[in-house]
Image (cartoon, rainbow, N blue to C red; front, side, top):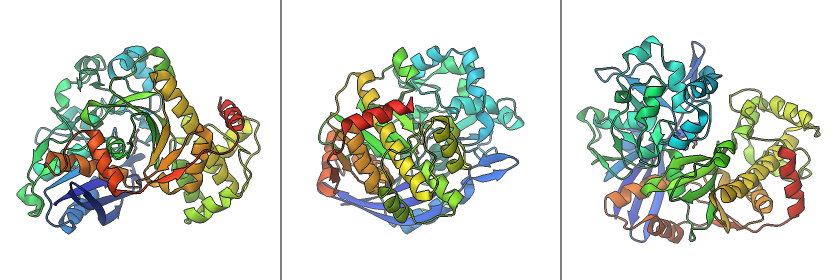
Length: 473
Ligand code: LRH
């Protein structure tokens, strides 16, 4: 029996989890949870990264004796180090507006088709490439000698070792997925010095022991994991078949399939599907659907805190009354989401919801329709076939969304585990330590043997969902 710690920095909170693993046991306990709230200062939305680091140390001490610890967080965001290794300012949060208009400028330099052919990455304003293009020219950037994605920054503070974990590096739009190497040509074309980007490391690589200053005598080593949270979440999908789609459902719904090679066709680029590097050389071929962020932001505006009551009320509202496209970029920044939804419904000539319950129903229906569209397109664009949809992450708790997704896709949905990201983080560490053996299928078999899923059978009228999808266009 071996013990591991998983650090996961999510959209509203960070957690440290302790896990016990052997050949037929796999337990996970949360030992420390802390807020992860961006801070707006000087007109920019920042990470409060030192406060997070302090909480991570507290959590790792609370985890007790562990063979290793691994860190994951959301993609694309980074810190810059100067020549002495000091952090240059607080990392900027990807929902900041500094990249407004930047993708067009960058794509005028390096064609969008050329970018996609090399990196396979979807066009999102927050891609690291676009963030860097907007940071170039600032005094801080002039001093920068090393770029570290946020989990790599935490790992650097813990160990003193710099590096770039590949699953997260693949979200920068500066990474060549076919070669699994930095895309130095693209960097040069946009005026970035390739020397800024540290050597790559694969998930499972041992980074090193904690530095004495971290005072973590109970942690033997820090190990590189699928440090992009979505990469870890997909490891944590308990599938028994290769013919599965996943919805990693939380703040975002990441909807797609697992492939062995990227899809780099023009049709794929125009559909804004992304190819992200996964654990064991896999490709996560997916679309970013706006996800439960729509509900979280609406609840913030309504000053409403009881999500279960709201979803229960939404379940009693009429179905498919007001469907809008959740992937509209107007929903990306924080703000008055209900007003934006109302405007989207009005624009589409649909009834405008008026109560929180009706808005919530509209969000659930629209997400289910967007899940359907993404599952359908992922299959068409990649030439694969899907028999089942796995929903993992916090959204697996939302029975209404799970049932609507099954109905919309016309496929069974298997929901859970809620903690897929932390479980995937631990599985990679456990394999590195020899506590579990084998490939992804073997790791997922251990998950199935130790974690329950809830099955939702598709019901309802397939034609109605097809018509609802047509209303998104
Ligand atoms: C989910 C996620 C997603 C990225 C986004 C920035 O947390 O990592 O995969 O696209 O955040």
